[in-house]
Image (cartoon, rainbow, N blue to C red; front, top):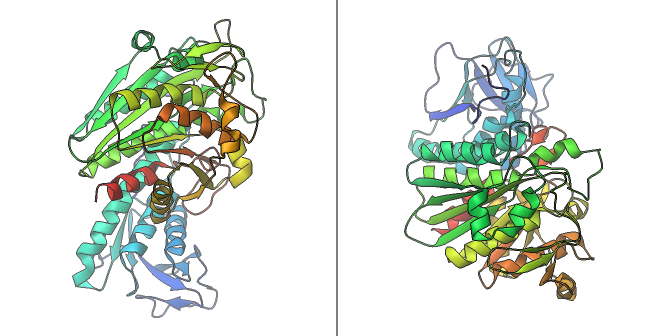
Length: 476
């Protein structure tokens, strides 16, 4: 019987760097604003061209691709536009992209990232997939620079692969994707990667260990919760990434409005980013220890759902007064953070989650929020994101709201009044203890309803690249 969803992971466009073109393979000539044509442009009529970023035009013997001012952002958008244009019944199997002499490693990384992700498609359909270009050869005239550009292309493709896997996991519909599917799928992929191990724990283990937050959130579903632990490396600094793994979120008894609830299949985008990042770190063989924790549950409505007013005991013993069952992400993250602090002794603890609608209001739909008491950690996260084309903004942990997290009936109040993104972070900080910690809220940029740059509608995969880059620079 055929699967009801596309295979995971999605196959991306292949990219190579070479110094020679191929006979019989279409060429792509780069056009800067003007237009100014790069190598291979002799004889091409430029009367209808502008060179603006992403402008893709087919000519008799070649294509032209606009790269605008030639910034890395321009090249990322251009790479994505090219692959989208090379789609359809007459799509070539491969093309040669003739690089201009100013191409450096940064521009290659940007172009490859865009090209690998721009043609991404996840659709549950009985129809055959549209034909798409299968590979690109980036042709440089500088023979001494080929190795540097190849290394840059390989890294970019690895980052794109992590983003794509995050998209795959988040886009999978929730009639297929329950906690068991998510954790076992991640474990099966991890088993094929040298140096990476995966352990999946069930609801019996969660109950024995006292994961009260995960059990409370998952208690209303007929599909029980799971806890995924991915482990890579044995030496070097130890980073622990924790990702929210809510495979569908109805809001529980504090039920969500119907509008937009269908998008809650992507409410485990943080967990997907952690899974994909661990796989990418292992494949790149970084000299560092990284553990990924993904507490997985389905927040459903039934007679066994947790209630506002309940008091839940988390892993490690701390208690939380529930005030809103739709604030479920922080409940499962609290257990995982406490588990990490007690058992893993991390040098850096980072949690990633589609946590609060407040962040969409604060930062819009293309920027993630960073919460941490450490200036250095904030700079590391923002810097890592900038290098891999993911935008972050540091948010304040305001002390005047810290008291609101405390409860009269329990240790903490789950959803205190005040600015929602900030109070959620202040709640999570209680479970991070004294460990260097950052909370990344990706509620805005984890999903998109439109095409822009390398992003397509649906899950964006935001966050995975930042985690990989953070690990790579932390280890250097």
